[in-house]
Image (tube, rainbow, N blue to C red; front, top):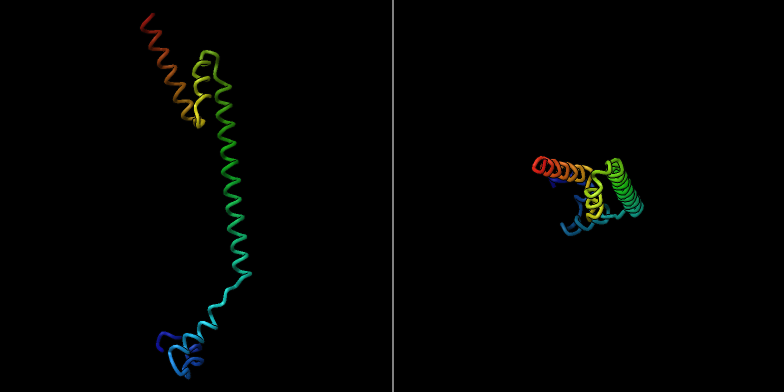
Length: 115
């Protein structure tokens, strides 16, 4: 009985067996708090919804940045722009930028070789 608080000890000390002690403790403390479970599930659901909405929001912002980046490229990058827009899944702005830089570098090499 050293592992039991004084308050619990007083209530179980006169139990006729350990089985009865466990039965008494189970009756007392093994209660399901349905309202608490419900509230926790509601909070979890709200967090998931917030996460999903924020994820969708961020994806929309990234897509807007991507479209803005492509729309601001001058006409000399029309071919690269067309190729980038065909990529699935849509690349990030950084990936698109890298592709444009590679295209520009390749064109510079071609001009230097022919010129």
